[in-house]
Length: 219
Image 1 (tube, rainbow, N blue to C red):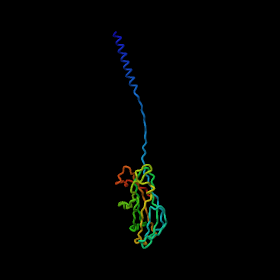
Image 2: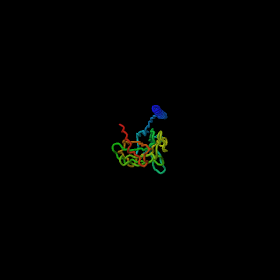
Image 3: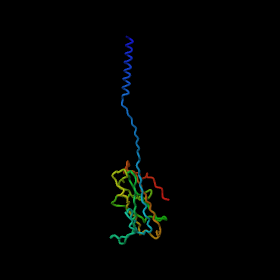
Image 4: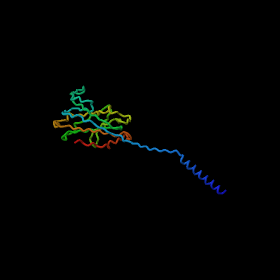
């Protein structure tokens, strides 16, 4: 009898073990692995090279940002007693970056031969999308800043599209009264630089243009 009870107990234990094992194996299982690639956006800005002017005159105004070159022109506004001459020159930015960006253009100029530049002045754009921020005290460059954000190829932050702001308007005036004979045959050199900083996560009141890598000067 005792032997029979022991056999029944052993059988009961084996059945219990089998049930536990069966219950463990009955869990539903699954697994999955995924991968993702996150590509950084781009900020890619450029600027055109305005056509050289072979001859300029004291009193001329060079208008930058015009849609086309009208050649040399004269006009005589009613309030002036003598005609004003000048040229139109296209100054145009290009943007192929994917990120929306803040943009500004830096302009500086000087006469060859270290002649005095005090006969040169700038008329700032008015009523448009570009703002004149004056002269950088460290570099002496005139600053023209887009009044808002330029949309990128894949990021639209509610700013400007390139087609509406690509022409950068301002005027360079050559004062006739202070441009004497020493300027005859002397070249007026102008340099144009465009800078862009991503707009996302940037304080619009403290845009870090100083962090922009300086371009390599042309040889």
